[in-house]
Image 1: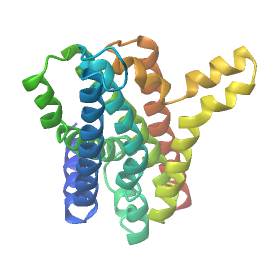
Image 2 (image 1 turned 60 degrees about the horizontal axis):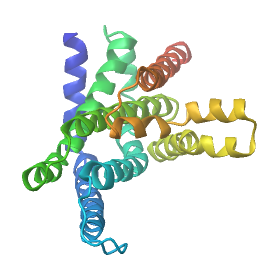
Image 3 (image 1 turned 45 degrees about the horizontal axis):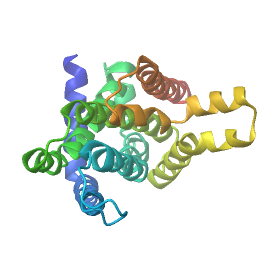
Length: 255
């Protein structure tokens, strides 16, 4: 465990040595702030009855603001998390330091888990930037805390899935740009895969809906923690890390 944490710390420091961490954190904070203001504006207009004829009304903060906000945040993550993982192994291969890792006394599992936890630590830091916005809602309003916590859990699991796939693709190439674009393409496929089932039969539609990485997030933002969704994200992360391990194993044989 000590070796894994050491690699994770090294990875986290590497993010801040390069501009990646500052660009990702800054851009994420700006985009989240814009979506937050837009969602808040819609909620205020709803509460004042500007979208109907019923006059002012009580609006559920969780339903009309926090849930759409988490959905918009997921869209931002789709574009930004590939930027975190694209350098993880690709840069090691480009600079030639991958040979040092492969010949070190560290196991493949320790290397992969260290890089995964390092990326997850930076991702958790990204999400922590949003706490001040959500905290303001609790200060001035009365949202339910359970859907907020489960929503953050859903975002954390979704991000872990994105990162695991990003690591797998980064381990297959020396080019960071190729790794980033390929990761985005794969994640986008799982994002829209349920659309393909709209013209298919009910069985195919249900299967494709289950494979959709976005559909599993919605219940979390409602305060529902279903074992089906937990199993899906855990399986997605496991498969991504397994593919990374197989890619590293092939690199050892080819090296």
